[in-house]
Image (tube, rainbow, N blue to C red; front, side, top):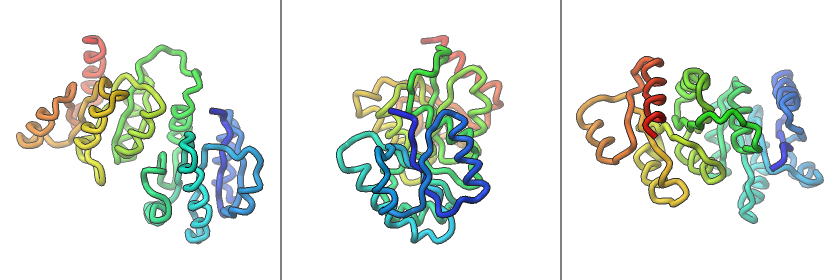
Length: 252
């Protein structure tokens, strides 16, 4: 996949222009447009990556979201949709386009490092040549995602998904060496995601380590019963978590 992307925004604010500049500086060719399906339909060679920056009158994005929904579903071709906004704006947008069609969501103010990491992982164009192991961290808590990225990225290639369905979508396109899976997540729980991973031949053999903040007997028994490769507590010190990953890969 090429590095062209469509950036839909209602107005050219300072923050929006700064985001587009950052994307351009990191090798992406950005086609910026307003949420106007006539304008979008006239774009030649429309990109397959869409970033929709939700702000202002959210209903003005409805037509564009329906248009992108149709493109994503029409021929099975890999297309990716990113939504940026506050929680209410993102929730409202997902009343128009199903959550399973949304690749990733980012809460404003967005950290562009997170956006770039997600984009580069999806593209997976061979730029990563370090030979380091790849870890996918799945957690609905964006603060926890960023924290783990800071902890682990010194030794591993760290990729992030903020929901189970986003993780499933990502894994359909790319390979990782280990999945760190949050146990408690809304909509689709960690256990449900684990069952989906194990039921598909393409992901059945990817090691999965559960992460949980709970250490009561009932929770531990549920985690162990699912038979993951390991489970770790989020309350462990960073150095202990990193050592646990090091030891896991040494044993492979």
